[in-house]
Length: 171
Image (tube, rainbow, N blue to C red; front, side):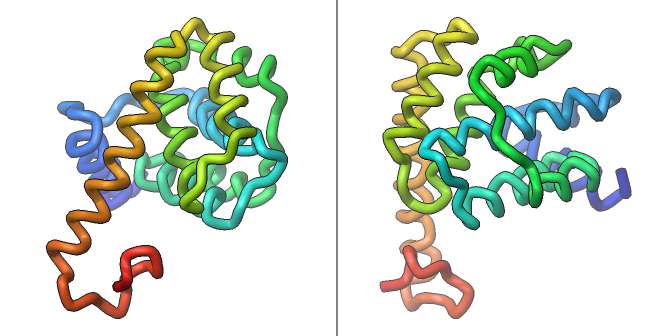
C-alpha cells in the first residue's frame, strides 16, 4: 500500500471500528472474498444499482484493499448464498460475520432503499453463518440510526446548503 493508502485505511479503521491499527491484509484472496461476499448480498433483489456498486468500491478502497480487488468490483458477479458462506469460512473472515452483514446492509442502503430481496438475502446469510435474527435486527437499526445521524449532521454543519451536497441532503 502507498503511504496515503495506508494512512487512509488506518484512519478509517481507527475512527470507524476503534482499531489501534489496520488489520494485516497478507492474503489478497481473503480480501477479495470479503468484497465478493458483500457484493453478492446486495444483489438480493436481483440488481445492483450504480450507487451500491460505487459504495462497495469506495468503502473497500478506504479500507486499503488492493487496486485489483477494488477494480474487480466493476465486473464482479454475485454469488449464491452457499458460496458466500464458503468464502466467510476462510481464515480470519470466520470472525467477521457481523461486519459482513453490517457492511452489506449499508451497501444495500446506498441508494436510499433497503429492498426486501436484499433483506431476505441478509437473513439467509446470517442464518447460515449462525447470526441470530435479533442481532441482524440490531445491525439494521444501527445502520438506520447512522443514516439519520448523518442527515442531522449535514443539516447542522451546512444550514445554508453546499454545492457538493448529495440531493438527499439539499433543502
